[in-house]
Length: 132
Image 1 (spheres, rainbow, N blue to C red):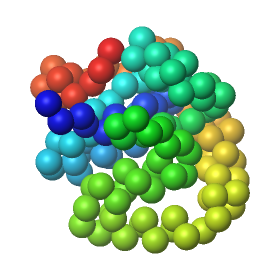
Image 2 (cartoon, rainbow, N blue to C red):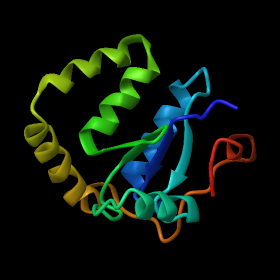
Image 3 (tube, helix red, strand yellow):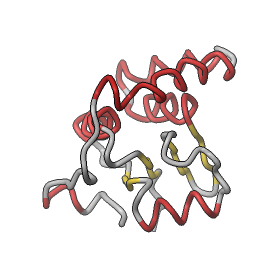
Image 4 (cartoon, one colour):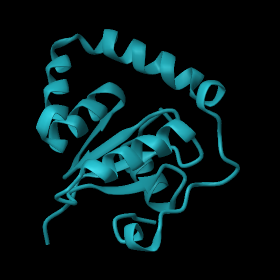
């Protein structure tokens, strides 16, 4: 079985949930799988890769590699294909600059976009793409 890239996101963050829904809508090939950082799988990955970002990061697990923050987001855009893959050009911007912008948005995401009391639950037809 081919291992799919897995997007790990903050399941109570409205911006993060909207981002997942954005990817789901555009991932016509169905290559991505998803898990909230609060899930058992999310906790397992954070522990296995010793990520210190807690719930403040967007992670992408590809095979045995883990990418975070702006690098993860750009790699997802690249895999979406079409015009979205053009965003990958921003990978040339030094990570300390990209991640400073990412961290600023991350630090303000609840204030700007709100927060749910519990994780978003996908529809039954999308549920097969989510890991628990």
